[in-house]
Each structure stands twice: as structure tokens, then as C-alpha cells.
Length: 143
Image (tube, rainbow, N blue to C red):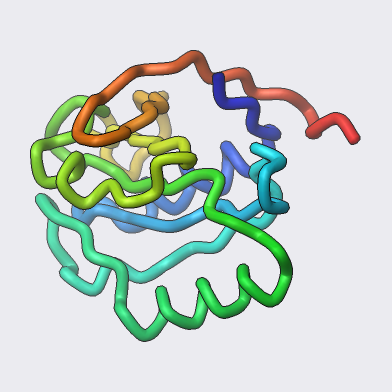
């Protein structure tokens, strides 16, 4: 199960809507081994595409250096789908390289960057195996 605070949930959704019709992507880092998504890091989709996302390699390298220095790990890896449901594509599954991470997908297909609900779902992807998990949004993460 993914437990995420309302502010981080809202930030992910806002990023997905703002980047529509291109896919948005980013990471939420947290203390190693904690499963606590605490530090929202919006990334640039280097592919600039409505059907594919790619982290900029320089930005990603910098993020991993920061996480290493802060004893953090990627707790959530998120991206949006702009025309399809919030379910990992074969490409998404092939790129999933963090077995401990929650892979969040946000679909903006219904309302684009206008007001309205989005589809927000989370998965574990390990060795190509996709398992959907429950998402709980709380006011703030318990200490």
C-alpha cells in the first residue's frame, strides 16, 4: 500500500495537468528503508512526448547524488499518461528499475489540463510483474 500526503498527491496531479498533452514525470524521495514519500522532485520529460517519458540523464544523475548524500531512495516514481488509462505500458514495465519503489501513474485523458478528476493509481513492478496497490491519501505523514 502507498500512503502519501495530500500536498504531495496534489503536486503530482498539478504537474501532470500542467505538462498535458506531454507526459510528466518525477520522483518522490524518502529516507532509505522508510517507505515514506517525503521530498517531491519534479523532473523534466526529456522526450517531450505525449506518449513517452524519459528522465534527463544529467538531472537523474544529480538527483541520485543528492539522494545518496541524504541517505534517501526513490520511494515513488511517477509519470502521467495523457490519452490512456493509468496502467503501466510495456515500455514503462521495461524501464522500471527500482524494485522497492511505488510506480504512480496519473491519467489526464479525461480532462487534460482543465479542472476535473484524474485517475491516480500505484503499482509495484518487480521483474516485469505488475501488481496494483491501494493508495491512501492522508493530511500529513505520521512521524
